[in-house]
Image (cartoon, rainbow, N blue to C red):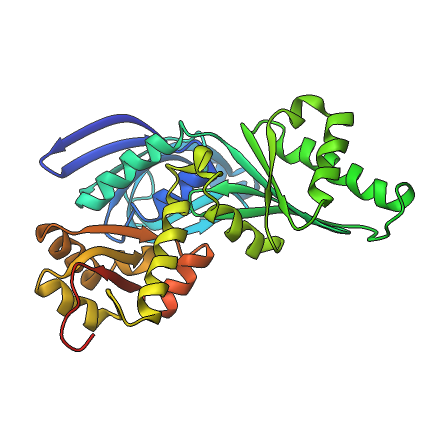
Length: 345
């Protein structure tokens, strides 16, 4: 994310941003709210004098519009953010319109900014300077390739092949296919983590060395007991991986949620569910608030975040796009690690 312009009086005013990646679009989903005013360039039908006679000649032209936001949609697969609202500045004022924001397209947001939203912009700017990481999970005859995003691991491709033990034939073809897919999807990353059970991952590294030695230099292996989503989760828990990923929010989310579940299991320093966490916050017992991105956008969530901060606590907003956030949502969207055990916990 790049910040082009910031004109704020206190926390009220305009910030102009350029999203540079799918991650940045995801951040914008939680920065833009209903009622905000957003400017961006878009395509709109512009009718000339002859258009009324020949309606088929109506064409869309680039114009800059300001809309009052009604709804925001993050479309991961089409790689765009759709901002729906009513035009308040520009042609066709009063009409509904959708701004389609893609990486590289700037937009200006005018609103009263909440503290956590300003922090999120700072985080997105820092994230753009972090290493780009791909994760491969592999076992006999099966592999997945994922890209590490701020909102989770996005699975890019799944490869299936022979699980036979013979050295040549279809088994080798499987490894070659995985390497080809890596060349397509991960050639520009800074690091590649190859994970899985047994020695299959070492065989993949040998084939990488044979066909793509430059890509092999970026790769290292990590032992995991599983592949796919479970394998990604194991990778994120590994201490060795933290050398690359230590500053990434997803690692923090995974570890915090594991810590929360351990405390819940032993009826220790944890609380979950909105009412219980509110009660813990009121007496200053919350050390770290764990809250989903969706809950953070609600009035109750915002109030809880402010109260925890005022009493010296911290908060971490979890992405509901990935497993820890989904599991946190099942606990009511909010939980807490506590400073001390409270009555009834």
